[in-house]
Image (cartoon, rainbow, N blue to C red; front, side):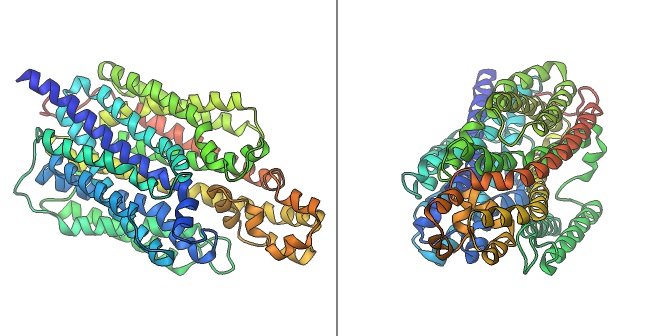
Amino acid sequence: MKSQSSRYKWIALSNTSLGVFMAALNANIVMISLPAIFRGIQINPMAPESTVYLLWLMMGYTVVTATLLVSFGRISDIFGRARLYNLGFAIFTAASILLSLTPGQGNTGAVELVIFRLIQGVGAGFLFSNSTAIITDAFPRNQRGMAMGLNQILAVGGTLVGLIVGGLLADLHWRWIFLVSVPIGLVGTIWAYLKLREVGTLTRHQKIDWMGNGTFAIGLTLLLLALTYGIMPYGQAKMGWGNPMVMGGILLGIALLAYFIYIELHTEIPMFHLELFKVRAFTTGNLSLFLSSIARGGLQFMLIIWLQGIWLPLHGYSFEETPLWAGIYMLPMMLGFFLMGPISGYLSDRLGARGFATVGMLLSALSFVLLTMLPANFNYLPFVIILLIAGVGMGMFAAPNTTAIMNTVPPEHRGAASGMRATLQNTGTALSMTLYFSILILGLTQHLPSAMYQGLVNAGVPAATAQQVANLPPTGALFAAFLGYNPMAQLLPASILQQLSQPSQQLILGKVFFPELIAPAVMSSMRIAFYISMILSLIAAIASFMRGKKSSIKGQEES
């Protein structure tokens, strides 16, 4: 019996690791490959009318996943974590098949892709919400840190591998971007169906808290969508924070989340037992996770903008090449995480999570400080060292903190607790993206127009046209660089370019003109963002230190 249990825990770890790797990979795989996808369905991603499709394909998956995690976790506590994890694998695989077979072209094709992508997010929600709980059920307490470390290596690794795989597959055919998940999904679904079983404590025969589920899901969805649309231009404004729909979405979202807390405190069988937050280790662990997600969630995005918009073109890479190479040049951060994730998880089983999680967040704070010291056109070796420090910090924090959170939760609430942990992480990441993108846009709005106007006039562009281009929202230029398009080719009308001399055209469309224009404004904004991240990381380190030593819910079983 003990031998069977020993074998099962490795089956549970390997299958759930495969699931979160695939779900994390697909969260980022479209970032790099959106131009190829849009070309495949015959849509120009830089056209104003395509912005809504661009936004939903990039963010819809994350929004759906984040808003459903707690609900799916609670439902899994009732109906079975392995069963609903397996359902998630099947939904994810079916959606991947539908995405790869998308029949439509133009706007119809874009709508179909968005719908199938949202369905894929539902499957990912089941995978994310149950994987941690299944591992906690399968492993004894003194091995959970090691198991979480291995699992989260693949979860974090999937986000970066997605960037590289997306870039490689985009060169073959856009349908391969989604088709690559199908064989993995089929294997994972069949494997989970045959091998995973319910070994944890469930709360069968309990009613579902529909009101709590509904207010939480709708409130968080409204909040995240409003924050996402807030960074987009609105009318003559550079961003959409003055949009009544954005302001209304934020206020209504917050009101619904506040009502959710009221419901959970007054219902007999709540969706999530808020009294768990009375446990210091649970509260401080989730608080440090949320703060670290805000601090680090936008880091990858900011570094990609830095690499694609400035550093890589200055080092001879064409804008079309930059998405793939940005992912490759960021590999040292993943390497640092790979090195420390399982080691810190293993050692935290014996020494406790507090020291590892605290030092991990201090290293993260150090990496942000070091990033502020780099010039726009840096030498790569210092950048590698900083990325390694950031990766090591992430590795030291992630597994010990997750294990410490799950060890404080009664067995019958592990699904909901796992969902809440993942929700706080994903919501923090979404808030981070909104915060940092807003800081970046504000910096560009203040400094870019004058630099753009002067640069274009000096290159021979008529003053009226230069003024018009300089006053365009900087969002378009950032999206162009992010998607691998030459920003100046998108901003300047083709008729104006054709009127310029050949040397002026080569200058404006070259690899140096745009990076040198935006570098001062981008670096000023990024330093502000990095300082904010440093402060959040330090607060997260304090929260981690305050968690206390090893702790668990009284009466919780040890295996």
